[in-house]
Figure (cartoon, rainbow over the protein chains, first blue to last red):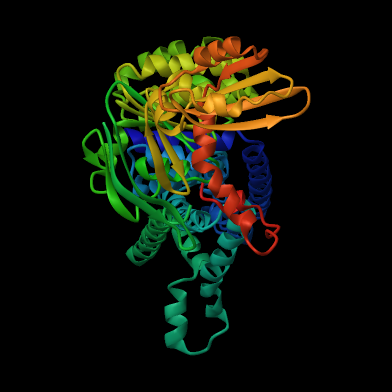
Length: 246
Length: 330
């Protein structure tokens, strides 16, 4: 456990010791700040549904698309950096398993992703002093962010085990995430109700909106958690297989 | 502490290590010597569990490297060839990270870090970022990282590469001290290093161990027969007289008008310099030069590995432009 925490800690700190993290953080805050001003504008309209104001902080087009671009950039350095510098050799020859390494890096990267979201708690606090905010849906919305982030970062972790090159890892992650993300959007194009229903199961926009409304559906939990575990498993297998060909 | 039995590592396109067996005892420093691409690094990567072996077995402190990989890995300290470090960390942070990764108990991490900072002479840079350190300090930081959990087995891949002479001497001293109570396997292609540091040498060439022994033994066993060289003034007929000396195996003469040079190959352990001198005096030859060739480890090494380079050159076609070293496994 301590070894795992050592990996998580180093990984998480490595983000903040590079300029990239601060650029991402600044861009993310700018975007979230913009969304927040829109929310404020909506709230100022007479007769606006004030109880749903926060919904837009989490379930809006900006956030989804930005996350889609953000995660490849966050995850791209996980393994390629270690391979390029050779520190992977030190890591894998210390008494840790591949699973611990993958999980440690995954949690470190997810931790950074969630750190980006931490400042948004300030918005919640500000809104709370001006409008009635139910904290239940807020907690559910953050759970949605954790689940979505975990899923996407696990895909990025897997992609980054496949290559030595950070750019390739980022593109690969993006190429995997786009179909995962947009599969649910086909929902809007298909007439057949059975297909629509099954596609709806993958529609992340809908998921995020549900979470932001305070709806925690077990099916969503199962989908996100199992997909995350699946990709982490692939990453571990890929790391072990890479041992054959350095 | 390190036991290797018939270890083989094959890559899809080539054999990197073929049927290698050796062992390193506690308190012994063994030098792994060979030209670039001979399989030194591959062997070390297999021993450290970074690469799986294709065949054969190895044990680190009694633990099988495949079946008890984690236990074997916890007993060894490994310094990879590149002295790989995280540039964004400070020296102490890096060492603490390594200590945690290597299962040093939480309460002892700090003390162990200070211990290796002291022993690796890192005190003056301990709070600097690794990216700002000189090559010598980086190498020492990497070595400190390999020592922080006090492993009984040390595997060091070219520990002195890229250092300046003063740093090399310091690192060698450190390794000698470390080797007193540990089993140390170090690779190098610098021959004086083997003489200076190692108790025993393994010479590896094209994936096979071609010689093994103390530096002295290797010299004696592989250097061939002792050779005495003599030079006499003018053209004198020395050949037959010299060949008659007891202990001379063969005589080669090269002469011109001003000088006669003789090369005497002698029987093992024979030093015929005095006999040559007395003969020269009694025959009235003017002796200008008289030496016994001292065979260096370098000669042994070149003799053992020279065929390596001769083979591609002797091929019927001109060598392909691709550099063989780059495809080599090391």
